[in-house]
Image (cartoon, rainbow, N blue to C red; front, side, top):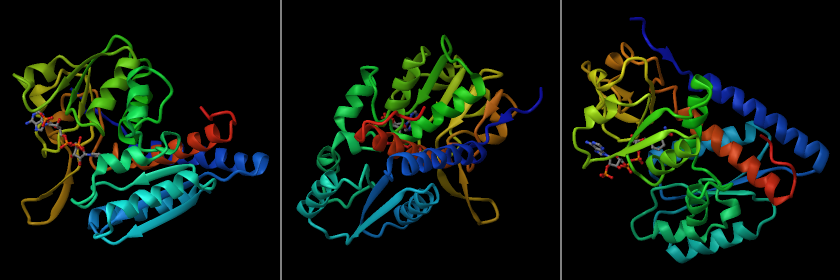
Length: 294
Ligand code: NDP
């Protein structure tokens, strides 16, 4: 059997960012509106700092305005909420993202719920969660949205396919399942209490792995020819002592069985930021009652 087709998230996300930049230019030229994204970072978590830097760079590259708010780790919750209230009222800000995790003394849910649902480009506000599950227009969380775009690019129509999502988090697993239901897949959501996980995964035409356990899903768990979306990002130590990134799927095994698979890195990862920009563009268009780009 030939190896699986590699799903190139770097190339797809670069094309998506180009399309977004074109729409931003049109908004600017024809409607004198520039989409703006505000990112709030509390504390000095090194991984979060890298994400925020990359988000800023990509936002500016697509012609949008980027507003960064970096607060010290001991910032009181009330101050974060006051900042969010200000961003909600700021007409130059169309999208608000609070980088998670927040320091322990801040109630993340309270902060998420303080964001105006129309500006909630992460799609974590209960209003958007509810709208997505009701099949209504919603701000959709970026990682599942990017994963769905890759799936549609590879498979075209998804209806009738068996999909197994491994992981039930609010930021990946659950919204991914909702999106796949909307596409008329038959969806199973697996988690740490699932019995006979390999057998469950073996039924799937589509496997989405969002577990956070390095290389947990083995090649012999997969149905030959299935499509694998590996959301996992795990930093492990290689045999030679160097650090490397691996997904939740054992890539070397899976590539021999699957029909198509996302690599880690270079698969879902770059789609997340591209979808954040897409959500900011959509939020801006909706707030100005302009046509929403497809
Ligand atoms: P969470 O830790 O919030 O959720 C993990 C899920 O996996 C839980 O539902 C858990 O089950 C389930 N799980 C854990 N162990 C097992 C097991 N042995 N068998 C079956 N299910 C299990 O993680 P996230 O959803 O936030 O992230 C998942 C992965 O995706 C991580 O590697 C993360 O780094 C990555 N990620 C990547 C992004 C990207 O941009 N590419 C963005 C966000 C996340 P239970 O609910 O029962 O505990």
